[in-house]
Amino acid sequence: MTTTYDVVVIGSGPGGYVAAIRAGQLGLNTAIVEKDDRFGGTCLLRGCIPTKSMLESASLADHARHADDFGVNVGDVSIDIGKVLKRKDRVIKANAGGVAFLLKKNKVTTYRGFGALKGAGKVTVTADDGVTELSAKHIILATGSAVRHFPGFDVDGERILTSDELLELAEIPKHLLVLGAGAVGVEFASVYRSFGADVTIVELQDRLVPLEDEEVSAEFAKAFKRRGIKVKAGTKCLGLELDGQKVKASFEEPGGKQTNVRVSHCLVAIGRRPVTEGLGLDKTKIKSDRGFLKTDEYGLTDEPGIYAIGDIVAGTPQLAHSASHEAIVAVEHLAGLKPQAINYTHCPNCTYSNPEVGSVGLTETQAKEQGYTLKVGKFPFTAVGKAKVINDTTGFVKIVADEKYDEILGVHIIGPHATELIAEAVPLLRLECTVEELARSIHAHPTLAEAIGEAAHATLGHAIHM
Image 1 (spheres, rainbow, N blue to C red):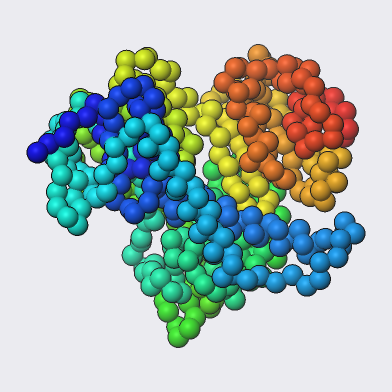
Image 2: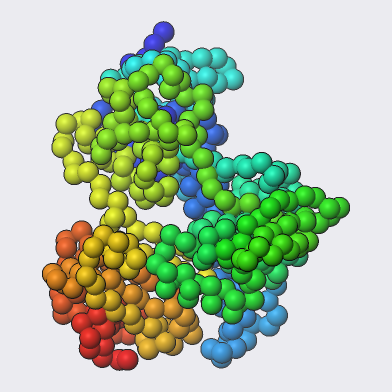
């Protein structure tokens, strides 16, 4: 017997569950299929949420080590990794329970098992107790991504790890080697340095956090080095091998010099792959590129009625908040509400390490490549009173603007609470705000957000407190 729905969503990550909830809000008879035993997807179970929980423990440890600067005596600081992991699991459980509650509240029917397409308008759910068939006018694929494995970087799950295994590691590595200096790599490097590990981070490109503005990358590397993290940029890892209780890694550094290092553990954080195997795409007209699915601006694939959102979509950011917005656009489109397509230039990037990075819009290099004549302003947190109060003056705010029309093209923040502060900049770009309008907007004192207003003044050539 086949059960019929208006919408069937495959995958319950931040794309899938948001799609199901929005469909439920619109009165559509909706079902969601999830292969894991809990809702939330990689972001909640193995990504964003657990890593941020560990980062919070790391941040608290860092603050405690400097408590004496504030006149607070706490004694020696030590890390109980068992309690760190238990707290992480409690956070995951609470959030997963919240997603389940929201699905139930919005009358979404849930199915446990592996969802796959059985041609247009049909989905099979394979579980331990058999196969269930569903049919729907609209299907949304939201199956997310998983860690990517490469030849020569064989993961054993004990010494050579991906982020999945490292989140469960019940010991603090003596020396952690991190391959890849994107968000995942630098966040784990930051956590384990705060936990007391020696850390070396290696990046094939010539700078850390290579998607960010070049000045942000330079400041980031300086901050990591000040924390005692060994940085090897422009360095190719030639291979890994287990050597007793150690991991031996060989590198080719800039200039062709080859070196080796032996460490206790290695994190391989060099990319993620779309989870589209076994989805039954061959039974449809959906086009793909190396597993990533091609869609129009509303998420609609070449198969009528089938949408794709999140990490499996070709050419879009692999970010939780991007997936959630794609979910809303896709559902409202299939419901005939004519939503606006997403402008991905306005999608913020956040790196939750120490220091934090938040950015939105064009980098200085990207803006120049697009032909803009620029005016650029920076303001350092060293000149912000609140930054001195919290004893964290690393970094700056940088504004990239069009000289002709004064329009803000990009905002780049490295420093305290950058991932929160960047929220102010997103509507500025969406509303085509000018630097003059930002400079004339009053920022409360004393706050870290003053740095954004001051950066606007600096872009106009008259920073007040610098």
